[in-house]
View 1 (cartoon, rainbow, N blue to C red):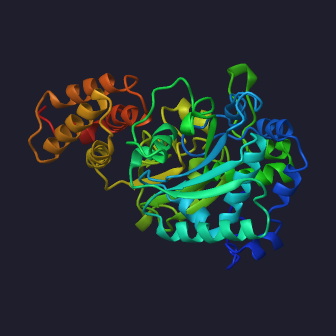
View 2 (tube, one colour; view 1 turned 120 degrees about the vertical axis):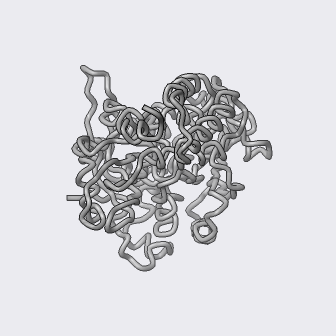
View 3 (cartoon, helix red, strand yellow; view 1 turned 180 degrees about the horizontal axis):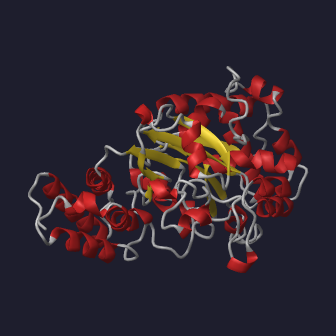
Length: 414
């Protein structure tokens, strides 16, 4: 049975309008948060075990706690990362179209929690409809006096996948080339315009009103509780999944953290045409695949990491038995090579070579050295670059080769 928090009112036809949102309890979380001290809000969020739902899965309370005290750094910012560019991910777009005030309310709560007077929503440039909906929703909230002293601004990106990374996003907000920064310092210390900045994904922010209204303990118990023995922080609440690929009913589905992957696929109507599952990419195209034998893996940050993959941004891509995994790997690597910012040599060169080798193999021109070279190139990229895009280039093909070796061996001489 699906547990719904963010999508519970999606059947309401005018949920994107302020009047409907408030009728359903909207802005009650902000109202309560404004009566709390910033430290009290942060403590409740830490208690909830909410982790970043944009890909990294870092505990939100832990991120906020790294900001310097407000009296030492009075100019502070909050940025909602709405640059959803990961292939296979579209849940943020749906959240913004259906329930924009849920995002705005969460953004305002976060601003109060970290004492920020400026809050930005950085939206993917291609998201024209969500942009207009959010623009209107911000104006509604402002006119109703809900934004208070916080100045909320909507900023449109220019279509760079790399801007999904917080530091590249901040660079482009400053009018510079979207090249990721090399931390430390982290954005919470030196962020936008050199000031402390919290960057959270829009789904993450949308969870905040529900945490404040219902309590951190309530949210934590919905998901996977911490495991002190294994030093695992737990994964609180729910996650919204973009389900696509070879399924009967592609779409957006919300489940409690820890729900088995199989349940998510079943909710999407199962595999299209009655075929069998061959592979599932669990967190968007940048995450290593799972095989059909791993469908009972719990969908939470730590469980997926234990089987060699990641929850990522929740883009579940189902691939049936007719798919050739070397073709899938080539498609993903070609995208990553195109989107590499070029700053790091291992990523810039390695992504092109990986794409070229896979392309040659698919043309029937594979050589006996191709598979060892793909393995070596991947090893020489992962962990030797500034951002996760480069790590992904190194991990994805190796992940497919490990789980589906026959699809690759058939493309090279025995």
